[in-house]
Length: 340
Image (cartoon, rainbow, N blue to C red; front, side):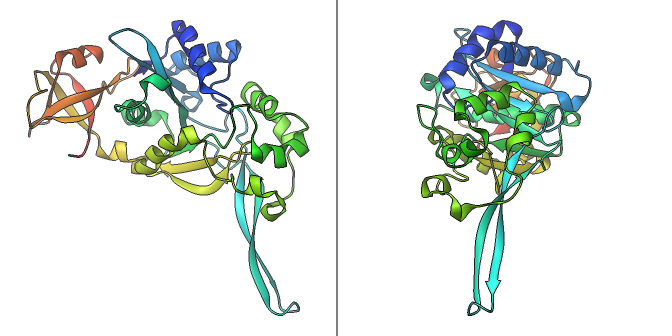
């Protein structure tokens, strides 16, 4: 994993085309993707006006071929340059003594903008042929190691949105049964507008009053808080990190939003600073699998690695790994070790 570059445009466009409908953060739009690469470059170099404006895009590169095979991203602050709307699912207690002491609960959706300033992790996508073997974990955990490398750039609270249930044609049951009635447009059009505008159209057209979930058709109720089938792995990784679903969902596809305090994120808690040393550790029984980062910006790098850690916090690893991180022997790095 490395910072994106302007010359990654063709590779990023290819990832966007392969990501499919509903992947809002990877739209097939030349202007948006060029802008994302430019903003990422400024963010890594610390050139943005305010730290919370930083939008960091990491690219997964196969170092043996130079091919870009995936990406993931961190937005330092949400809801700052444009509103960040969601539905919160609330429970209303209904009771009536006059109706024979009836009491029951009903869920309702209310429009909220309550995550202002949260750091957001997202845009995790790998080409189908490069999934497995720890690649997804690398793409995900790289984002938390980035936060650990420069904590002053990120919020104390972190969130993630997962793509909701959307079929291969771009049809969302949640949108068809709810959003379409208020926006009078297709899901793909609303999705495009949310990615390319300041989201004023959401404030203008969204319902201003609570929506009782029981009034929605079953196909819409069933997908509230459910993620896309291709996002199940990412959801499990987020749960492993300590993220929790707090009954907040996307306003377009009903996908879940999860959140955690940055200091409680497992990768950050379990990471440690070490001194790197070159050596052959592949056949050493004391070696362990893990992830290592250069722990510095702007030239931030992360790689899977086999390492041997001694009592003095010296991590021995392949010279090729150290070189790929653009480090020298004796330099400091941050590692996370997989449990035995």
